[in-house]
Length: 278
Image 1: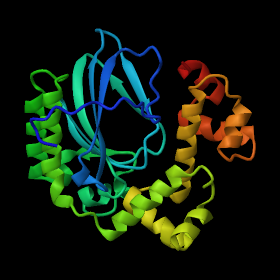
Image 2: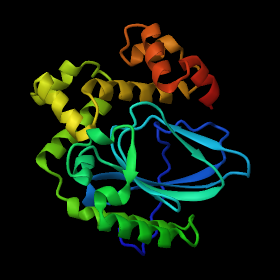
Image 3: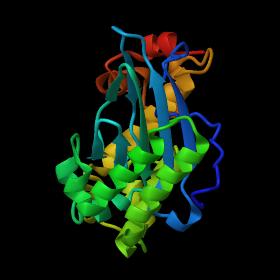
Image 4: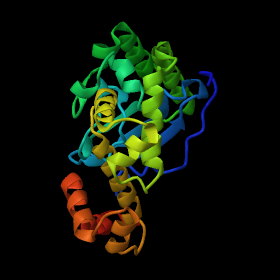
């Protein structure tokens, strides 16, 4: 995408973002990454918020198994995967420009295993060096005027592209982990690690090492996260019984599903449906 071309926001709702129906604290712009970054970058998201003085707007996310790069007016960070529920609290007026990487990208940005970054973040310059500093400056300059401007968004995304383009092409192991994550996320019949091993011809030990190195997690976590994201999506609908949700996601029984869901989100499926449905 050329910097002077105003991109069009996506109109789909991320199932990972557990936004309350009445939350009017921010406007969210979402854009696909340019085709040249296929396998490296997934999509950009740009929230612009205004929260009244003295109030807060917590944003909760069941993060995908990928790393994130985020620049705002106050910080610039590289985020590893959050294994539980990620919470960001919005206050005052502000904006952020973030890119959701493909599974392969984290190890390329970090120049090694992403396991040390699980459940933590570091300054962007710590992983990208001077390129990270230039990226931060360019994004802030683009967003300084009108952070809702689609043209400003295009310039900011172009800055990310220039900083991350040197990581292309994606390496063979990275392509493998992209396919592996797509397989787990795309088939709700995948409920056991052994199914992933069989699909990709890997021993359980080899699979464990691959996922730990490239994602900082475990294969079992990948499966559980997909199931919980789909559960959250279904619970935000209307009238689906909990037992039916559990069965659709391959749980042996409703109590097992409820324990998994509550442990990660801190709320029971029934309470979640009551809070977020609509």
